[in-house]
Length: 457
Image (cartoon, rainbow, N blue to C red):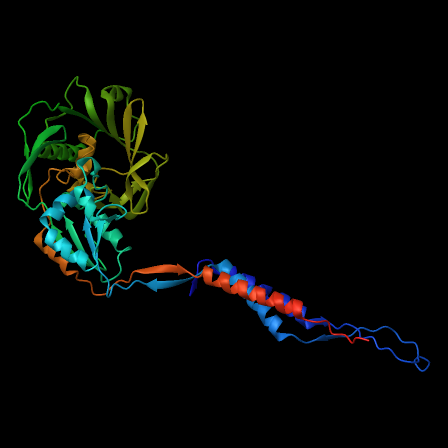
């Protein structure tokens, strides 16, 4: 037995109340009638008392009543482990696909239902289904709100350990958004819609269009021959004696080669999309004016220099850091070090996005320029594209890729060394209330039946 609010057991301190009542027992005086009082002298009126319990039954009942009240305040419950032995299992299928699944697997489903298997919707809530749902109309179809991985994980909290679960569902990769969970139930996956098909769609990345061709094994992207992607103009300023710009230029050439976008650097009389101000000095007005509206400027921050070994987390990778600048403003953090300090932060001002870099593009400050992460980290800055981190991993309904065979085997064989137990909490408050009522009624009856202790004339 466990308690939801163990602090309620502090009410047991009230046990001192019946103890005091029964120990501090005043006896009533007895009146005796005699024939003559001539031989009696004057005496003071004296009352007697004794510190002993005279009615143990009432004392025990009253103590039990207080104990039960304390237990009720603590809300007792018992944890029961659900047992799947000698019970049926579950059949999982999306309600919208149930008519077709039942048609294709009628013999299997009928056999399972005769063995007390329940049919549940493979969707949020896992609602019970019946055979009448096999005639559901198209208007009743509901798109699955969660991916297979999330639903299989949630099922661990609902299905008793060891239960057999037959799942009739697609094994396409676009239905999985996480690592497949370990299950405490025996999962038997019956694939549906297994016909090998090909599909294609058009997607965009870095301002260019790509044609994606998908089959059950792979998705291939092919750049389309289109010249509608605008040229990207980049401006770079550095102080005399500095060579940091060479790292920026090398990264830009790599980005242009990968994205197939035309990128120009320091073109005269051009309006620039991105600017790199590689100096601690304030950005000149002429340089700001050369950046297009909604453009961005990457600049060196100035301030106190701190030498400490850490890392730069660029969200595209992690590289070593040896020196940084202490930030003197609280802007939107983009990159950070191992202690959570900002290494790159963004400030929006006058239609420009100013990126403050609290280090330097120099091997004496960090290993960023020597690492492949540098190109990946600069890609979203030079080519603004929200889909950068998702390119090649987009979740498209036309994606025909399926789960690898070895992954499928791992799920079906359910290889778990330690079986997890599914339990439920059963409250005991009803039992305690009933017991408290009986004890209170008994205590009241005994109290009223007790006769006063005196001698009648």
